Image 1 (cartoon, protein in one colour):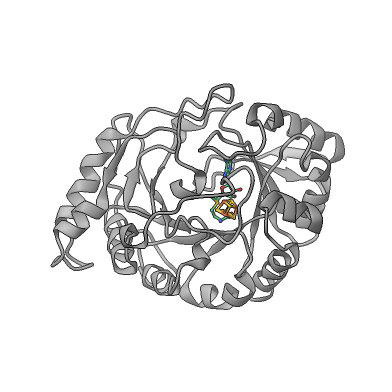
Image 2: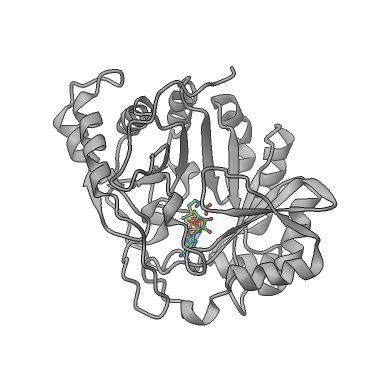
Length: 341
Ligand code: SAM
Ligand code: SF4
């Protein structure tokens, strides 16, 4: 089915930015413990405080009715949430949703690649910071590289195009694999985004100011290796993209919250697994959507007026931007896994 975005954007904030993209965290739990994302002994939200699958569907549909045309399911690890395919199916059948995407660590992708494709998922991002099994175990604290690699191959096999790797590069951890990761995506016609590590939550591992690897340094290194051209392409995200002179299919993106503030073009909001609508990744401005949903138990997915009005009102809370500072203790105590990265 070719999808068109018929709904006019109705979510406009105080700075005139249209919100057309929602990241919905479907769980704060994960089968890995990446050192930049989580601490070793994470406390997770009690299950009864999580949105139910039906509540997620209601929230997703309300956003679509208000002009959102892209939804990304994330987490925690979204594919570990029981019966999560039903949410993919419900949202994937919405005609006004142009893009339904997922960010995953890939460990369960071998099993889920085909069902996700069948449910209408348009693109997949897989997080992968190293191609070395021993290092993968160290960075994820518990993971097995071969599972993620098998997941990526399965996604390619079932026909996903433009699969994107997300890689967090940390000085002294994996900065000697930058070219290897780029070569990995180039031979598979995939994209890659390099993300600067953000100071979200206590991780009890490295000092983030010491491992910080800026996008500018990365780009310089890559430009010494490849003939890269900046593109003006926008994928509705904060990444700035570059193309290779000798490969039309792959792109390199840089997500640089520290070195290049991306807030002016921000088109997104996040919903945590508990149903908190977060207006900014790096600030605490929020609205409790679970409360609204549970206060209106008789509303249906097609008639959820109170929820829609609450979402429209929340746009007034969206701040102008984040103010991350790696030299301070994390000002945002929420981990990325709880935020919906
Ligand atoms: N578990 C899934 C995964 O790893 O792809 C989805 C959730 S994860 C929180 C989403 C993305 O956030 C991943 O690409 C991960 O690398 C990134 N991430 C986690 N913590 C981060 C941090 N402190 N700074 C920058 N990126 C981070
Ligand atoms: Fe889990 Fe993703 Fe966080 Fe790694 S980055 S611990 S895979 S949520």
